[in-house]
Image (cartoon, rainbow, N blue to C red; front, top):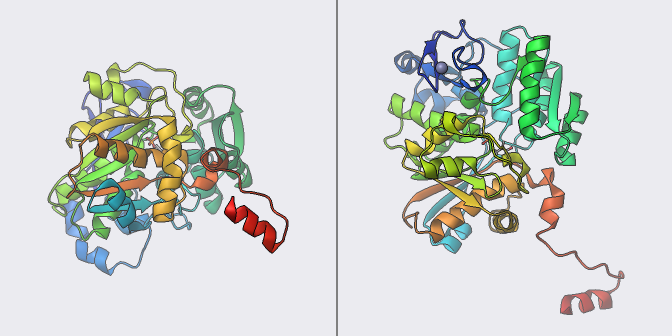
Length: 413
Ligand SMILES: *Cc1c(COP(=O)(O)O)cnc(C)c1O
Ligand SMILES: [Zn+2]
């Protein structure tokens, strides 16, 4: 990894070599999230836009020279990344915008954006010779880890709140991970995993504790810019729980600015559920991540429920350094967005992903978005992961006799 210069603490700025520390800044303990610093001159000497144009690798690994892994490290076989960026003209028209795209990560191998990070976690675990990999999760990160670990035969141990949607727990179990349902919140599961991984010497994928998860997630920003012909969008809407995705989007864009591959920094818009909005509050109050206190969090959008967002330092920087904003949307607005997105794009999303679109609606209503701006919304997870929530937004269909008359009667109703 000669292209990685250092790991830099997001609190104190201390820099460490990747051999010196495994996860967090020793001075700041479990909160001392590290940022991976690269040698961009070295990367630019090895890797160009032309190489990408010629690349036949349509996965996140097309960007391997920009990722914190050894060049010759084997990567998992599942096809992660290079997801579609669909133009969304009917949604755009509804909102009075001219240029809108949705980045559709519902078709990832385990049906969420989390595969991008878990793929990197599995490579890092194997580089380190780990025998077991573990994570705490609201559900999707664990599903992604279970699936990616299964693809290479690495044992995985999963800690999720017992309230996680059944489809996600089914994924963990079917992929053969060892699953423990925690009688507590995601925040409780997170703390538990830190202790357990230290005790047993397991490789820990926990978001924001493991510095490499941001790097996996940044690949979506690299893809968006490449898919738009290296003309960066003006605004990107991101659903935010722990803040790793939003920090990753920011990181990918910073990489591209440093390489000179894009010429402006998009404004990053973070969207949280009203019942789980600690980053919105911190942004409104001008707090730093390390000044934030845990809050009690709840929302229908289970994937973005986090009382103390673990990647809060990077998540606040993403919005502050790009002139973006944090927005909150209610559970009603989130649920209503599920059919709106599905009917206008053909993409069926889970509540957390719908929150990003609900945030765009709110930003447009509040006059924050110029109609000429080029806007991207991240659709981070499949609707099939949470059917119970989706079904709250639609009426029950009629049950009919198998006759023409019954159809006519039902059509008339
Ligand atoms: C995890 C997740 C998010 C939020 O990502 P964070 O990094 O926790 O902010 C959004 N949508 C889906 C579907 C997720 O699984
Ligand atoms: Zn520090």
